[in-house]
Length: 222
Image 1 (cartoon, rainbow, N blue to C red):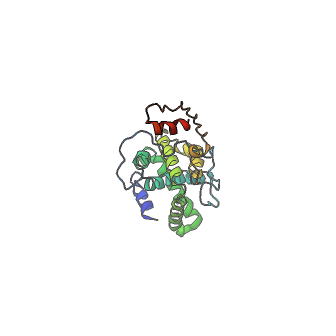
Image 2: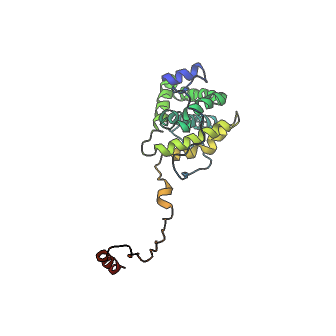
Image 3: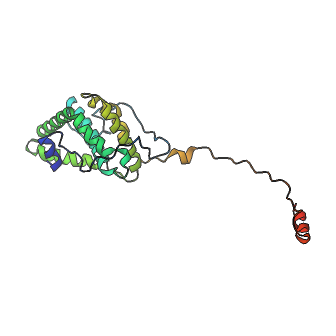
């Protein structure tokens, strides 16, 4: 297993607790002027959109797979979205680890059992490869702002989700996180109606105060 997974095995709260100090308290942040819209709706753990293939997985293993992918996505956001402390991706991710520690520890145990069942002695190594590739699956450059904004919003909502319901939250919201990896332009700059300015009507020019030679030229221009 990787160092992060070994840490998780030693203690759920220590696992993947992100390196950076907590960001200062702040109001909700908005990177884009207009809210981005991504495909949403329930998703099953067996959906290929969730992540890597899980051959011969059972229903509980698929649920753990879905939960683990959501956690991994929020972890990647905590690491890569620190350019904006107002998103609070670090502080909220660490709080999620504590708030939903039981479900996360259970998902880890289920996945560890899955890879041992499927790969025997190579189970730990397979789990390590699965974890690494899962993290890499959330890497993005072109869509970083959209991904960070979506992950920040989902992180805040996950903290408001009661303990024991994190799996249900993942089933309802994970599709948005995966969709946010696709670049989307800010609709404000492309869809807003252009501003139409009313022409300014100027009155006749007053030439009376000018010297005689300049007054004639001025009156000729009116």
